Image 1: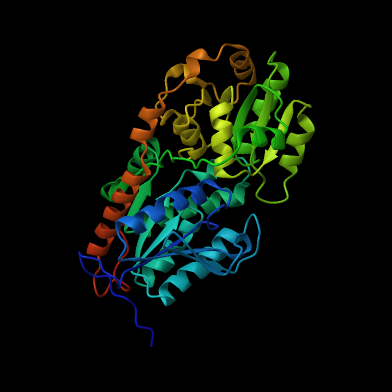
Image 2: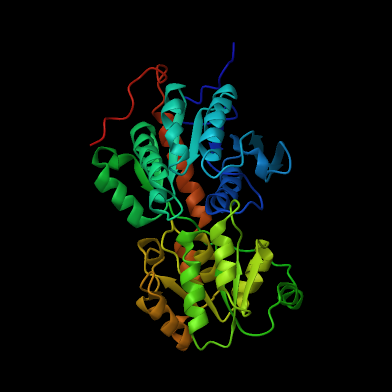
Length: 394
């Protein structure tokens, strides 16, 4: 019979296993959740070395079935590489794997994978869910997928022992929508990471094809990132700079092909780049632009701010949560307004990099996440596998 680690004390030790799922994996895997976990989990392991940290990622995105990164174990769970199926199937298998490994806590990232919170709850694990944003508002999803994502949000809020929201506006929204769970919702933001040095600026610019001043956008080539707005505004503007877009498409994407067809010769699609290369680009761009229609708390914008880039962001709530001056925002989806802003001077778009780094700290996020884990563990009862779920939601 499987002997599970209990994890039922306030002084966690070596017996505590925490499994993390809902992400593809890391390091060097594209995506906001992936970047979040790559920054956060090694810090948690460094602060709390006694616990065992296991990421149950998706095998198609990982070079090895099992590996380790800064003390965090990375395990690839088999799943199809499919836009609609991979998240839910991989999370289902990950929850079973976490139970088999004797995890005391399973930490599920994002509301799609959050659909598996009831299974994890019924298997007796303490369930923590990080809500990265209202994914059902993403333009790429149809009606069925949006309904499934809303269901995932509801199930996560109903069955998770603790919920983490990565932005203040999201935390407020969840407390208003799920008032009976308000005390179990914690706001723990993404951090502004210190990107690594090491990229030779001249070689980076030459390799990417940058020949002079350039504007920079960083994000996946998906509709909610608003890159179609940026390209349209850029092509209509009087800017003499190049526009460099860093990022790739998740799957075979007609949208990505349309973007490339829309773009003129001064638009450079640079693909996925290393973090050292990103640092070089953030520090040398004339302007960083994020025209997103939907975000959680955008790590790319925090990276750019921490590198001192001048910034222009759409005025969605997640971008406003960064707390820049009003002049750093433009009306989301308004191509004419964005075009005018691209034609204006950049001097007043500078940001206080030190203030951003101080406000958004991965080290502080790690400490606060450990507190959430320990709070969940204190709720453990010997009969947790058969007890009632969190109080019913409105």
